[in-house]
Length: 266
Ligand SMILES: [Zn+2]
Image (cartoon, rainbow, N blue to C red; front, side):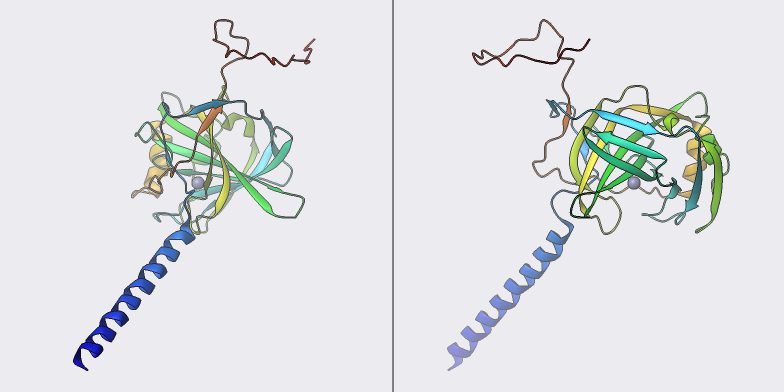
């Protein structure tokens, strides 16, 4: 009888451990395998024909700027954009800009390195079934000699207390973007709880510049940083726009079924 009891005990222990592992695995899988931010390895980025980006941003809007938790890991300062003030078309799909906010240091890394700050332009669209799709444009921020004049309307007097709001008038949203719109694109998640996936990410290659003073003003509100750690890429592919197709000396693969390009750009 003794052996049987001990066997039963061992079996019980095994079941207990197995259930424990399953619970742990399911908790883990709730966060998912397509998380953001990531470290973008520029050597591994795949050139592809990607839908064109068409930013239709208003040059004169009123923003509501709100501090959502100074000093907090997932806190930030958000600038809310009025409905219809800014649309981003990605190919034929139109996304509306809802709000933009900042992280210090950057959330996306480039070749293993973080940058001083990152701005997130959070866009949304509702598909035919009424589901909300999110698309976030990430813009890296580096230190330059001059202050960013448009962002100074916000950064010269950031709301410092949790829940504090201020209005910013006559803001030109087009000034948030760099000159070049080449990008890194991949599928990821929100970088704040609940880390929901299915978020399209477009991280622009060219950073914008802010003065050290402006960056320090933000740092003063988030002295411990407010960036999420980079997440495992888990086999995801980061794409970038193909080089200009007009390049003559590009080697063409041997292909008998060359499809004629019917586009006549007069
Ligand atoms: Zn963000």
